[in-house]
Image (cartoon, rainbow, N blue to C red; front, side, top):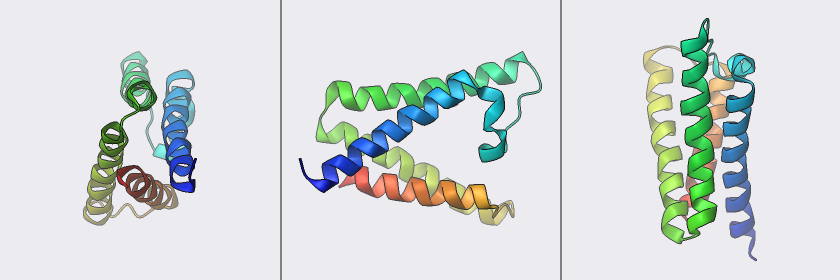
Length: 114
């Protein structure tokens, strides 16, 4: 197994891990995402979108195992990164957690698209 494949697997595990953290501890993601959920509806949204979506996408990559699903996940990360970069400028939100997220999205995106 080559280094690229190992890094891709780490990116997918990171995706699933992010999903599980959001699913299990939705109130604890504020420090990293800036998101708060003052009520049950917001908690459900964090669990389902940040939790379920990331878990599902990561599991799909492992379940299907094709080059194209790795690329799909990479394209998702790159799309999120592009929107985040634009939003950071437009919204004046160049905070440390946003910069870290942007770097991770670009790195994971590139690794997974290769």
